[in-house]
Length: 316
Image (cartoon, rainbow, N blue to C red):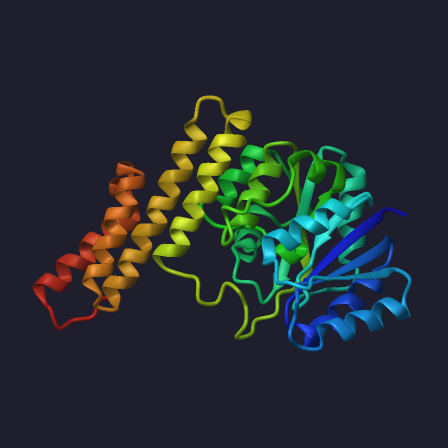
């Protein structure tokens, strides 16, 4: 059977850890090994991890004495992997039955696939819109790297708990960038896409658990857009030219991000925050002046005009 190494970073997620690990151990059609890396948790994560490791030889456990943060922990896990395939699974998420078998099966059938992903229940990503739009009605799809980059655009198309990577490819591209603490996963998928094709599984592969301690909960607005821009800039430097030497892909992705900034400007205007709306608009147009020709800019201009005509009216 195909082998899969699953690295489970854990920081104060002891209450979720058993369900996460058992969801991996119960996968069919693959031979799995789980490495739990506890990043100096202050809850009962370490004792729960020790119990899981002692109960099943497929589970091993490492503990940090000092908190190393998530990027260093991810990269430590990547250094250990040796199976055919690799998954980074946060301790607060868990897999659904058959997820690893479906992923490994796709990549066994097509050796050009660098990684594959699917839907994650609870994840606020565009994968559901991608399949419901009619662009993807089949159970599987394999995309070229440029096709994936354009579909992903300025957003992160990939729910991380579903992203199974070919280990040889992960070793080739290296680990996560310390300079991207908030958008390292987005940059990683683009970096991998520059080296191989990308598989999509049109099925629920994992559960992304929403709770108050999610790292991404409070990370939105200008900081979110700027983090995405940094991820794209890294991709332009290290991967995009392999897909499109003309640099048109770079210009198109920056224009897409600019349109996203204009959408944020419109939402700020809806809330009556004129300063934020102006900042988002300025930022978006600095990325791509062509965004002034977009539907998002036109909607923003209409909302601004309506507000000038009727200052007391909140535009929808």
